[in-house]
Image 1 (cartoon, rainbow, N blue to C red):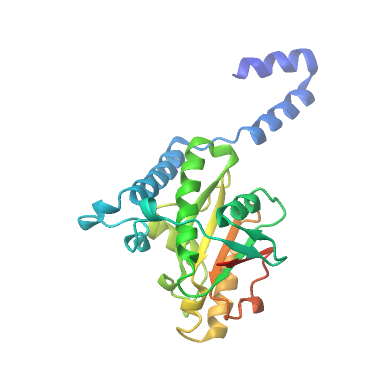
Image 2 (image 1 turned 135 degrees about the vertical axis):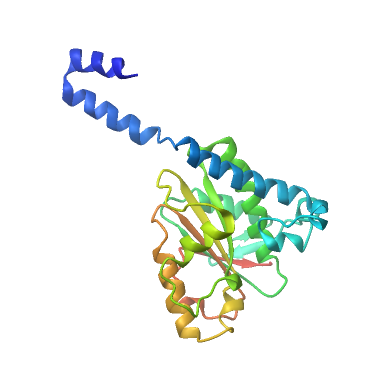
Length: 239
């Protein structure tokens, strides 16, 4: 490929060559073989686990909450509404629309116990895993994080990176890809200890996330997420 740049430099000069090189570098960001192998292994495991509920008698899924229900065969589309009272007969349609909004990176999903918050997050994690494998340059890598598995009453520096590396064998420092992180169950950790310490550590956790990534936080409707989390969109389940 270097000979192409030599010809460009010969006919158009070094400045044009550098501009073309920089544009190509931005347009076609390429992961190393090791990085792509790591990501693909993680995504294929999510897809396999979601589609093979019957195998869990002898195995454990990479996302442990998948053991609860066979969502691949029995997922029911949810109805919902947003903070502007727009009604969505299929909740996933709102989610897909939000993914395309470049200036709206924080989403809060509210609903009572059993309304389907976790099921929606797991379903979208599965769908996004398939999307990224098929078209990696246009999609996000999904990461599902049940907040009750994290130690928020301890020092939270590097907590997110450490959790993802330990749980999913995945490195969040890949700057050439975009992530969407599902933080599921704020209500489950807000009653587990010092609420002010929990909120402080959760804020520190969000600071580890790149501005190009997206955040989804779920909670029961009655919990005070507004004191620390300022979403660009709010989504209520069910209708």
